[in-house]
Image (cartoon, one colour):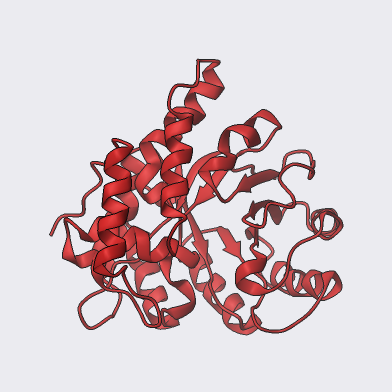
Length: 294
């Protein structure tokens, strides 16, 4: 198994004015947040509007992403309900030598562990060389992984099922599998998670907090005093007052209009909410140097 350790951002997708995916700027953004502290990024997670972006545009980005100097640091999200389309997109990614995938169970329909095991089994059987991170986020897909389900999948596919992003937070304190990555979905869970054996985090707000989160991670690994963890948690809590995607695009959009484009039904914050966000972050003395070139 190939464990994934460290600070990962669920990277943002940058759109053109006509709401098509801006390939160049999306890749530039992902590379910049790696430069600012992330060990890697997940492309086309929920933060990247994956469920709203056409498959053709995803494939176009993958073709360009393979040229990135950080190609080994990318996890590819599928963001698709269809089993067939998920497998097809993964096949394209594999031809480009991407092998790590973040996959959430399908949304809308009601099902249980048995059906989830069948869903991932179909994927692992079809793409046997894939390395899959399960995406546990009941709020988005309506299903919450049980410990038993994860254990069963790992026992069936020990070389394929390598980790879980836990955004429902029912797993990270209790799930213990050797050589398996458990990655909570919030900076507020980073330090506690590391202390109990988690591997790091995959979060939306690491688009903005990459430097702080990396320092908390490195200080833990090096046995140093934690001096910025509270600030990191406070920044996360501030963004949680809003839809995270809207808040992040508003935050970055203050200095670069490219970030203000979102696919409906998503939107940036209204003017009052935006001023409130800027004010609260300023009170925390928080800013980031990550800024996409115009």
